[in-house]
Image 1 (cartoon, helix red, strand yellow):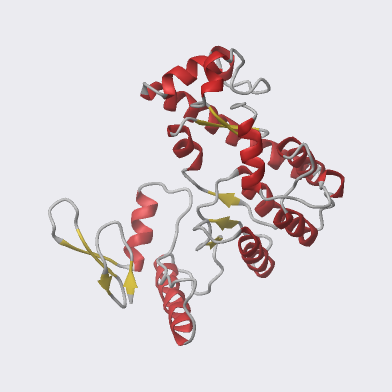
Image 2 (cartoon, rainbow, N blue to C red):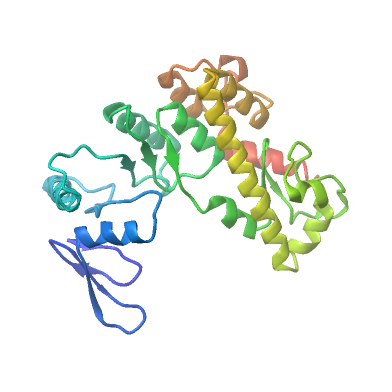
Amino acid sequence: MEIMTPFKFFRVVFSLSLQSPVDGKPMLLTPEESIQIQNRIGADIIMALDDVVKTTTKGPRIEEAMYRTLRWIDRDLCVKGLVERNLPGYAIGGLAGGEDKDSFWRVVAQCTASLPEDKPRYVMGVGYPLDIVVCSALGADMYDCVYPTRTARFGTALVPEGVLKLKHKAMADDIRPVDPTCECMVCKNYTRAYIHCLVTKDAMGSQLLSYHNLYYMLKLSRDLHSSIVRGQFPQFVCQFLQKMFPEGDVPEWVCNAMEVAGIDISSCCAPFPMSHDEHQTIYESKWVA
């Protein structure tokens, strides 16, 4: 089978054969060693090796990949002295790769419905705030993504209304904080105009926006978690959507996902919702006009 690595492609069956990017020497990564390495570095989420196939793959290749991954998991678990596949958690991968949102949420819903409720469900590579809220409603628990810092490097801040483009010329004279409702160090001490000057000339602008975006994501996660604990998650979802889509233009895929999740968002949905990208364009245009 062919497996993509940060190094090169190789055809393997029982382990991964890699070529060191340092000295070019061959390296062998077995299922057992991959778990040992992740334990040694103190990984928060430990992943088993997986035989990954393209989303367009059909036929016996899918079954082959499934059973190979299961055999690898068995070998990983034997290292820990386990005899059954009572895994501590489950990862949902292969998403956040450009597929349409309607397919995205349906796959998440199908997977979470089939996985144990008492084990964490981890959706790999998901980092957009809207996606996190939707996936949480569908039963997912954990996420990871470079989005908050990557988008900061392009001069973009995360705000309750969506995103704010600090490189826009309209920001040059805006003396407001990035987000007036945010209590992070950046919003307390710097104006949009100041950061606008930085992001076009200095790396410090990206660093400040990274700090703000990570603060935003941490607060979103805390608020989401506490709403679940308090039994007020549906109210949290409605408040989140009302801020991001004040005109009620909630994307249809979000409305459909929430219906499956059993969360009534009719109070914040217009009859004919537009896409999230269209909403982002409208919001950003406010700062260009």
